[in-house]
Amino acid sequence: MVHNAISEIKKDVKNWFKKNYKFLVVMFLYLLYQSNFIIAFISFNGINISKIPRTPRIWLFTITDLLYVIILILMFKKEIINGLKDLKKNFTDRALLSINCWIVGCLIMTISSMLISLVLKQEVSKNESLVRESIKLAPLYMLFTCSIVAPIFEEMVFRRSLYGLIKHKWLFILLSGLSFGLLHVIGNYNSVLDFLYIIPYGAMGCCFAYLLSKTNNITLPIIIHMLHNTILVCVQIIGG
Image (cartoon, rainbow, N blue to C red):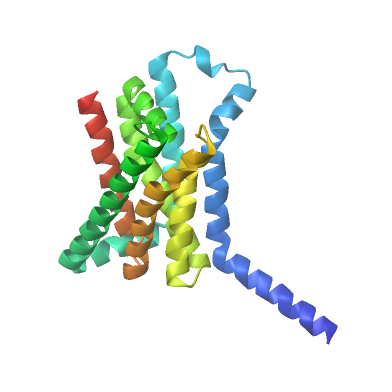
């Protein structure tokens, strides 16, 4: 009896890992990406990154980011291609749904950000402030990383991976948005009140999650996320 129970548990664990191994790999890659592991590894081997001239240093960061993107695309190549086929087949419906989700996300994000800014008496969140400073220093690199690297990574981590783990639709949407919002605040905050910015970031994350749950097409939130970030970065570049 006990032996059968243990065998069943082993079987369930094995099946879970077999079904969700991509989630574990994506999370591992994301941790490496967030910790600048490749750059840290280069520094560990005696190369002082800060002494490398600015242009080669930016190219180094670009290449390392590109490696992560290539790995993710290869991992989810089949799903991305199927998503593009679905978009081509149902272009009008998918485009209208995507635009509507994006507009709703932008409205909630804008209104909530304005209200939070009034409460905190600051123009933007700490995260947004740091992004704007980075755009001024390296506009082309930030255009690349914000418009390509971040959307692919974040959609795979907070949408695709969670979508495979959480079966309940609205729980998935809520947790996806919450974790997405928390990511944009947890590393950059001045006080506890700054965590209010989870609301605007999380609202957009929920809209991306809803889009995935509605269509079962990860390519759509990736594309909309790319367009959203590209618009924001271009506005900063032009306005700066």
